Length: 261
Image 1 (cartoon, helix red, strand yellow):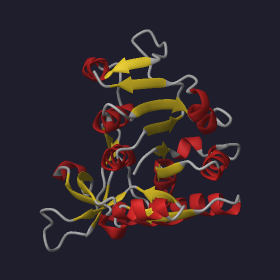
Image 2 (image 1 turned 120 degrees about the vertical axis):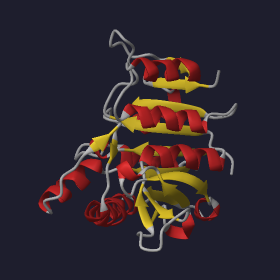
Image 3 (image 1 turned 90 degrees about the vertical axis):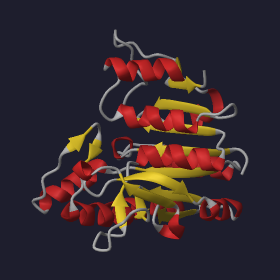
């Protein structure tokens, strides 16, 4: 696949005034090939609270026991995914909602017992995405994975997985031209709090090591590093800006670019 753009959108950038869905439809109608990977952590947390399930995070990732996994699966593959797909289709776009389980798109193994049923990507089977793209659809991917490696017989077959990681691995598997993270910040900030327009891979890793980059930004950086090659642009931008995605593809205004050393 050539000239594919992978876009990771978080729940924090999908507010009532957000223009991301409009931008997706506009870009698709202009002939762009897009793969959308979505989050939805805040919605999951809200539903977990309703079920009386406590949420705990480690390095920006949700610790997921079996009760939490059931809610995560229902909310991300169901409610959040289908709302995004419906919004795209209602505006005249063509989108299909899938999870990392469908077509064994994302195969995973357990990241660590301390994280519960949280996976790490072992393999991306990109044929399903390629077929949907060739047929003119925008695949909208929810962050679940098929627990296919070293799974005990009694364990669930589905695992939660960080959407940032999925975005990076999908971009790498497709040889994407762009990987764009739409966030609720202006970009990556340095020690002084100023947004850095460009960071090499080594510089980004150093900021993580020093603690300047922390929390939920770490998996985004790692995903960018995973996707980097000589032909891929990786970007972290402010998804709260009006028509940020269209402007990003037109002029790459603001945000932070992470590039290969």
